[in-house]
Length: 144
Image 1 (cartoon, one colour):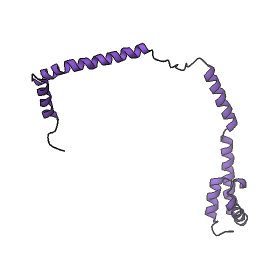
Image 2 (cartoon, one colour):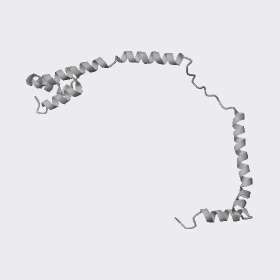
Image 3 (cartoon, one colour):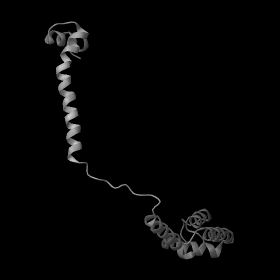
């Protein structure tokens, strides 16, 4: 038996790998079997782990049955008319041109009406004077 295998280490390994010897790590298996033969307390630890393994095995569903049920449910869902998946259709070119035309009209209107609005709000008669006033008010004149 190695110096590392103590009752606490045995209990940790059994808690991690269960009571079945074939699940134990290969490098620690001989030491675990040796301490199992020589210490009576390990039998109680192993029995407790076996009961836990049995309880967990009884609660866990068979993975093949779960997989089969999921695949059947998926086929049923895909073949049903309950939910119709959206079909993406290409947008007609006419709709794209109408949107582009509306945006261009707004842009041109802003260019034409913009100076008049600036003149109304600022009070200058010339666009450059208005922009100069705006830059003096809103833009910093000193370096940051």
